[in-house]
Image 1 (tube, rainbow, N blue to C red):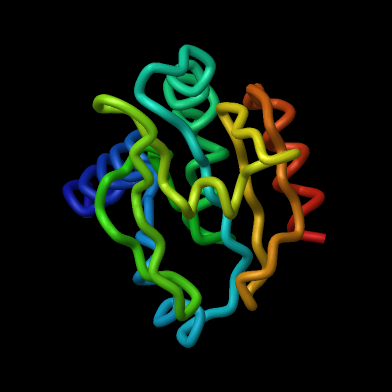
Image 2: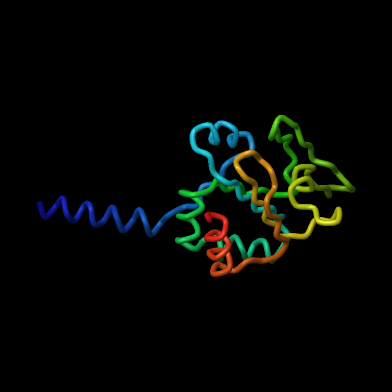
Length: 154
């Protein structure tokens, strides 16, 4: 009995302490929505954006945020400079080069452009029908993101 308690206790600590944020793909969303309807949160970033990296290392490393995103939403971590073709919502989006080793993905523009400009980091929230219900262009702290998740769940 004591061993069983210790095993369960250890498993409980390790499973909650190391909660990893699950990132989905755009291609998987349609089939996931057939299983369970959820809002989609897309984090649009680049590798060179300091505020994007800070959000990845602080906001998205927060255990409560990871747990809520995993259990209540579909989360997509999307690099706006992704070069592969992405099929989403019955449409194929492509990487658009704009110079030597520089460019942006059409899907990033579709989801996050404000006044035809992309500002990083960006969040795009969609309903279960893939309709954009919120766009946000700025760094979001963990406490502000928790507040946003609460509002989105209402």
